[in-house]
Length: 306
Image (cartoon, rainbow, N blue to C red; front, side, top):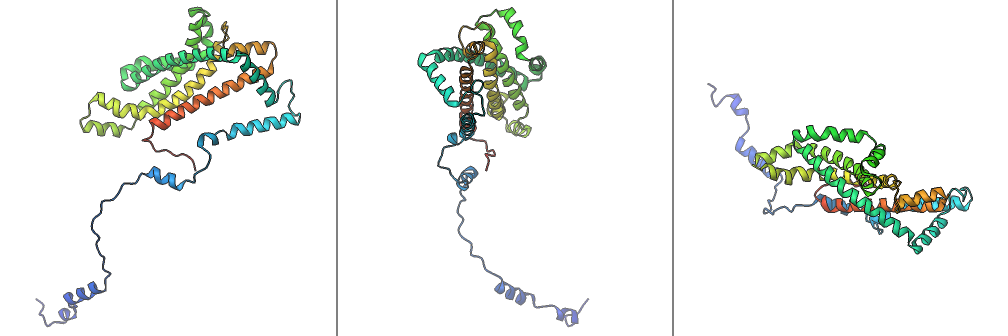
């Protein structure tokens, strides 16, 4: 045993006094009463930090087409473009005004819109049904997926002679041709989106006792919604492309019919009017999908550029 009078014990500091002196030298912190912290939406912070422009976003997106038209008009004014093959924008606008004043353009446009809407409705119904059946069950995948992949590999326009042989040269073959491009785009993107839903979300919902029906409606389908909207964007583009070929099947009215007549009579100005009409219809379709995304995907945070 070591005696208290030994050097080891005497060399140790006086611990209570030493701790007292250290506590006096240490900084003191005044504890404030507990105040509940307010949750801050990160998207609001991003919007505050982002410089706001005076022009709406929809107007800013028109910058590219406006620059394209300005360059086109400049090259036409400098006579770099031949007016016989590439008319100036003002010539195209004048031709469009003439067609609108006579009512000819509206008549053909309405006929084309009816075909696109019918084909879009048919393709959406079949594509969504097949995607949900394949995405939610392996039995549905075994039956549907291979057929859809085959249909995807075969160009839709190659089926045109078969459709004419089966359904004739009436409206049915035109609508089915449009719907084929729509249903493939809807099926591929929606099926892929369903299968790419985060498995941890499904496991967490199952752990909390969520039933299968509620799991599908509250977890799987909302998680696949972004992929469906991407497919809808591609489907609208495919519908307008298929319309041109569909209206070559003995169509009395339609933009494709106008295109065929203008090509036959070498009316390049009318062809440019129809090209502009397809472009405007495509932009309107894209705006519709963007509006749906802004309304249906408010819960999703994504990178929106800087």
